Structures are given as structure tokens and as C-alpha cells.
Length: 359
Length: 222
Image 1 (cartoon, rainbow over the protein chains, first blue to last red):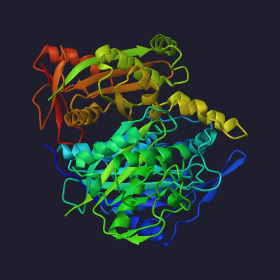
Image 2 (tube, chains in turn red, orange):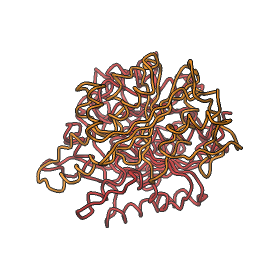
Image 3 (cartoon, each protein chain N blue to C red):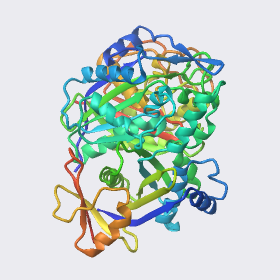
Image 4 (spheres, rainbow over the protein chains, first blue to last red):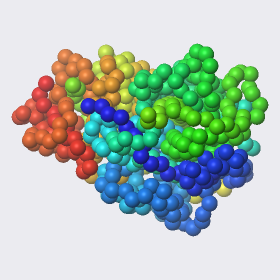
């Protein structure tokens, strides 16, 4: 058995807005500026969410906002949860001595409770492709007829360990995110919580294909030829039975990393023999939200496409001759039916998804 | 149709795990975490040499997660004044395990790590459902499903190798069913250790569906 899998609802809270539609409107009007956070003696730009209080209270409040956007959910709805840091920020804030929970995914139970869910839970910890891993697993089970609905949540909330790791590896930009730009010099991280409700019932958008893979070139940067990323995109397109020439837009990974952006450009040249559709990156609009990024950027993209508006790619100004591709410079009206979304992850994960508007 | 082609189960003290990883990988996993070492050891036990170049996905679950490394990181961040340099923590992240063991498993093409949200049980039903969906849509592929835990005093790994190609001596045929009348097998981390005997003893066994799912999985003699 295999059946189409629809996207019944989305929810998103990120630095660019507190609903998917608000994010789309913000991007159309011009992306927000990043704030800053310090790591040791250094300062880096960072896209933070608003709100204060304890880590858990703040997280609970954000999930209450997500629940509000989604509307009533059946208590037994299966939860697929993606994050690269889980509740690390809560651990960091706890007084010593810290007793780590015995189950490393115990935070998923907290999230389920905040969303009013008591059904099966499943977590994913695959760094930046976690969101697409969760979407792929949920989609496979729905397509096979083993589930009818699932909620897929991506979550990246503040902690000191994650940015410290990226800073230690010299992967962060000291000033700004510049996707595909000649002056790009690293990532800018951000917070987000996002959700996508998948369903076997008819819906306006279909998750037509999604594939994950492994790029073993290096733990911190993809194969510069773009081969592994192109391969997962081909896999997703074949699942969707869609030709590259039928794509109306590509949501790039394009996080402003010197090496990864070039690899993605090479992957796109492998995929598209001739003309490319418009290219769009969200990373300079609300940051690289790591384990949440796949779901957050899917929710943002669908909101833009539902509004019929393709926003400019914030942070892009100067073409890089080596990349040879330019993301959107100005906003434009666009009726898009099919989109490809790329994700490249720390640790060698690569993933791609194809969404298609239902006829 | 898919098959359980092989199973593997192992348990180590910390010293035994380090020694076994050295024997298997030389110094190649010197900086890797215990979960990565377990992943390699259980993969080498379950995949014969001839299968290590076939397209393989590694789907693994863990209750413990990188517990020791997380505790060390939190302790060091709490006591340090300068910029944290969490290289050891980064090197032991679950997302890195597949890249770290890929040199010994050249066919490894995808991986996914699943932290479990409760103790004392596993989630083989969902892991195996993922594996069946994977093999059904990728001819010639195989999936190593594993449960890996690294606690302070011991580490353990259990795995099932799932493939559409049964090989020479498959242990069981595995199929999703709406409901099963076969005896149930417990969804616990040690399932791979007890499955072969349960299949061989009678007509087979079944893994119940988690609440909310409309599938059970039957294991029957091939």
C-alpha cells in the first residue's frame, strides 16, 4: 500500500514572526536584523525568540503558541520530534549536582504534554537534518497505511553548548549570514519551534517525496562536488514522480558557509542541466535553526507560496563567480505548484524534500 | 517481502568496549563516543564481509544517549571561565556516528538516531516499520536496526539486519499485519537476542503495534 501524504497544517515561531503567515509577511517586507550573543570573549549574531523566564517556562510558552496555531489535536496523535539539542539549555541552567534523566529523549514527553498529546512519541537526533528525518519517517508510515495522521515537530531552543561547538569549529560568521554571497563567512544560528501535521486525507499541499542520505566526505562540510546532495534530491524527485523541469522554486540550504554553499551550488548544477527555477534561502531571515530548520523552513516556504509571494533572499547582495548562482534579489509574485527543499547537516547528513500543491 | 537476515547482541564493560573497538578499528575511533563504537561493533557482527558494500541504512535507537559525554560537557562548562571548546562532546554526537564508521561499512548510505523517551522498553516496532518502508522502496538495500546504550558500568548493543534479499540462511520472514494471533514478543532492547529462539520454537511471534498505529509485525520461519 502506498498513498499520498498531505500537509494538513503548519505552525511556526521564529525570529521572523510568530505564525507562518506572519513570517511570510515579514520576509516580504524585509528580514529582521539578528541580535547578538556572546560565547566566551567573542560575540556572534544570533536570531533569538522573544520571552523570558526559566528555560522550561519559556519553552512551555512557545509550545503553547504552537498548539494554538495548530488548533485542537486528537490526544492520540503520534508525535515525531526533531531537535539537535533537546533540553540542553535546561540542563545548563539547573543547579549542581545535575541528575540527567535516564532516558535521553525524556524531553519529548514534556513536549507531548505541552501539546496535549498522549499517543506514541518518537525522537530524532540527526543534527541539522533531524526535521527531515522525522518528516520522512512519519511520511513513510502514513504512505504505507500504518498511520493516518502524525504531528512532526522541530525544536531548537537556546543553550550554550551548541553555539560553543560551532564557534570552536570556526563555523560561525562574526557579522552576518550571507547565503551564496561572495562575502559569506559562516553561519548565524537561531531559535525556532515549528510543526507540520501530516495526513492521509486530502490537503492543499502534498509531501510528494523526501529522502535522507549520508555524505561521508567530512563531518563538518559536504562533498564539494555536491554529489551526495544531488543524489538525495533525485531520490525525492523520483518518489514524487516530478521532473526537475517541473519545479517552480528551490528552497536552498544556503546558510552562508563558504564550503557548504559551494557544494550546494554544484549539486544544483548536477540536477538542473539548463535553467534553474528561483532560488530562495531563509537563513539570513531567522537564522540556521539546526534540528528545527527543516520543519521551520518548510512551514515558512508554504506560507510564502500560499501568499503567492516569493520574498527576496535576505543577506544576498554580491554574486560569487565560483558559485555562479543567485538567489532571489527582489520579491516577486509567483504561483508555484512544486518546490524542492534542500537540507545539509553537521555530521554528514543530507536531505531533500519535494512538495506539490494539490490540483 | 523482507527478512531478518542476521541478529547480533553484545555487552561490554567500559574497558572491554575500548579494547573491542581498538581491535576492530585500530586507532580510527580513538575520539569517537561509546555509542559510535557500539554501532561499529554490532554492525560488523551482523553484516558479513560480503554485505558491507551493499547500500545500507543504519536506524538506531538509544535510551542512554551520549550520557557520559553530556555530563562531562555540562561539568566543564559550569567550571570554566573562557570560551567552551567542546571538541570531545562534538566528536561523540549521535549524528556523527555514521560518518565515523563508514570507512568499515562502505555501503552505509543513510542513518538516523532515535533517542527514546522512557526507560525499560524499546521501540523496535517503529524502527522496523521504517526499515520495511526503506527496503520496499530501495531494491537491493538493507537496514541495520540497532539499539545502543552506554551506561556508566556497562554498554550494550542489539541489532537486526533487515533486507529484501534473504541471503543464504535468513532467520525469519518479517511482515506487517493488521492483527496477529501469534505469541507476542516483548518490545525491549534485547529483542534481537531472544527473537531467533522464539521463531524457531513455534510458528513464529509478533511485535504488537504501539498505540495509535494500525500495524503489528509478524516474524515467521522463512
